[in-house]
Length: 508
Image (cartoon, rainbow, N blue to C red; front, side, top):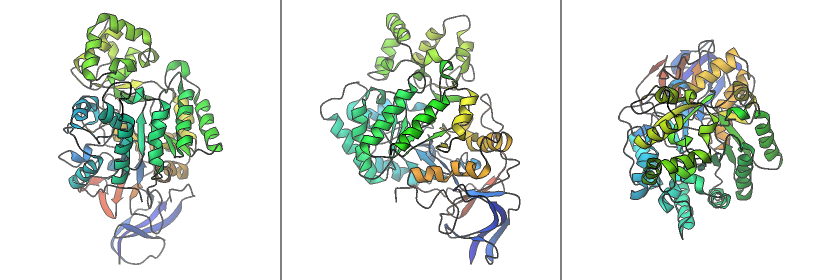
């Protein structure tokens, strides 16, 4: 007998095909049929007027430590997300040596969810997540920043043997179940790496046929050169390439989304399997210290503090330029510390914003921020392109965070699909499902048909959306009625069942 029958919904297959009105049958953890007159079921749910889709896959999450929180966290399930890919931007929480874990406890503070950062192998990290019982499925990338931190510390130049050490750690992670390699080339210590170092690690990923996901070395004035570097790495290592959170940052660069898309299309025409993702907001979020030049962070937290205590070094860092020069103090919202909820301009008052920034980072190098960097026309142009999927770049569901943490996918579907018509519904669903499953090799997910894993989202297209703001982001999205995770109903008519039904996913 069928375990669960979703009757009469508007079914999207996740592949971009036109929707059909049909029933969906689930037995165990598998979709067994899509059609009519499918037979009796232990539970039947009338979903007439609702969209029935594959569960959404988030290619760019920072929920690495969320499964280790004491209580189940449904903030992604409420968006329809059944699978999160963590370990992005070069920051995975393993493999970490004891010394690296101490440094990472500061570097990763904004995404650690209050869970202690400790030394462990990648295999041990995956076991810890599985044992805790994730609320949704989790697949993990191994991060270049983490590999470098463990093998070489926070110094710029590689010590003898460090490159080989990183390669061995990467191979161990892939053997344990990492689904790819990530980099975050604006963040220390990854920003100290050259193209050859990254290519060597991507070649290790190639041995497992795994992708390379990158936060580009530059997303503003030197964006196209950064894209070219990523394409070169992927081409020479023969790996699939995911360009994380595609954006055109900095006011002087607004209106140039077409140039980025042209680069991606040219790379595909030349044989590189490149795709990207983006979040549907003009603001991004990261740690406040990212406004400083990369040189400020060399040598670790202690060295950073020493530099910021020296007025002459502060002045030299200011002259070096960086992200600080491409935004305005009023566009920097602090999400941590005693000034949470205030902008850099608010804190500065009539003073010097650079000096205020340095003082804030000196007081707490782990302070986070939400920073407005993009233009709406660029966001929409990138969003409309078939090569670009939806990814949240979420933080952890604690304190003041970017609203994408609670509302990325509903905002995309409500504001940009239903209200603005940037793409149609079949394409929107594809961007949330198969576009990511295919790129990361998550077999059986991202499509809705017989034999698919029964990860499903059922929502009201007229009600889907998110009312959260930068000032009040943690608002429950509207319109998500049912979410099915491996055959289990975990959002039941809008209510979270409090079950931890997620699994750790590994490459097929």
